[in-house]
Length: 264
Image 1 (cartoon, rainbow, N blue to C red):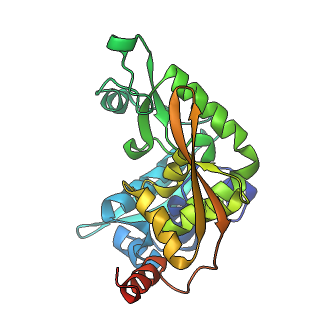
Image 2 (image 1 turned 30 degrees about the horizontal axis):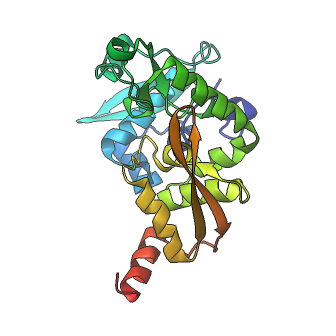
């Protein structure tokens, strides 16, 4: 039996917001199979590129089975049933992906390597699975045992903000993701790696999230920056002093319009 999209059973599954949207559409379309093009037309461009849309649909394979038929060159998808293994916990990372993530042989946080510093590297989820992170390569990174342990302790300290963090990750706009997290901490400093993690999602990788954060100042946000030395590394912290309500429509477009008025 398929769980209703609004049920607690479905809400407890570790799925991205995009995969949940696809499931909801397929659940409501039972008896009428849909192609991936149909799904994109119904849900809009917020789901990202076609490759990303396919990945989000495959994310459902962990919990559900599909009846697949052909309509010419297109595959039609219809929800068939729930897998009995859905509650067995997080899926393991396959050996090929593990080898790919560890191929450079250095920790993504401290830069130490097994050969030069005798550290042991582990495959880490940038966004933890408990927070909805997937096994997609974009969400995996190599960390040494010490950095991985420190990251786990950091996320344990963020437990009181989990609902706010999940709300931020559900936003399709990078500016809204960053802003939502800053507001959630109610004026407390937020470490840079937390903002970087929220800024980038599997469907919207942000290599220059600092620029996106600075752009919030164009909207009238006041953000203070400080630095702190922790475990042999200097971290940047950002504290929200004052914020403005979001402009109507596209945030990025509103920022660009204000920059043009100021002659940037």
